[in-house]
Image (cartoon, rainbow, N blue to C red; front, side, top):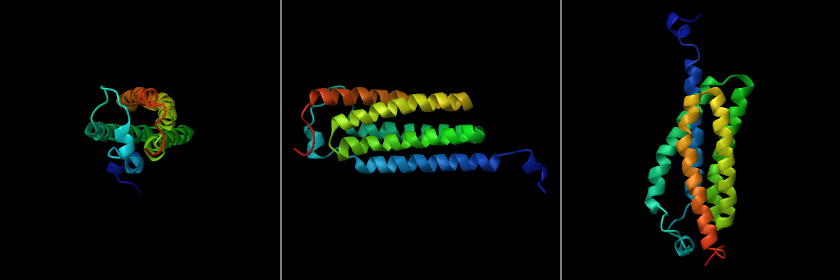
Length: 173
């Protein structure tokens, strides 16, 4: 039998589980992605980069709060979604995080700005899909994803510039 305090807060345990699962998934994606980055490699240093590219340290400074907002939004959205909508939202978050981590693999591990561009375009599509699905469940969670989506669009523009400026920069130098 539940106590009065337990019955007055239905789903509290489920909300914490949703937030913990979302945080774990985001941390896993961040770690997998970060392990592929090698901004000190001769290949990356030799790329012709635009003047408007932020310094290397800025990427970690930006991604940390962005990943925190993705974890918060995913946890909030998942804790509010029910039934098949919750399953679809969880799948959308999972696909988005896989595509997010895959960009680093495509760009840095393959040493291919073109493969990276394909990955970041897929991430942009995934972001639109995720924000739309999240908005159907929770508008605040969807709004929290917009800085992440905006930064990914900036990353796409940067990746386009790198492809244009480095038409033959694939593989080892």
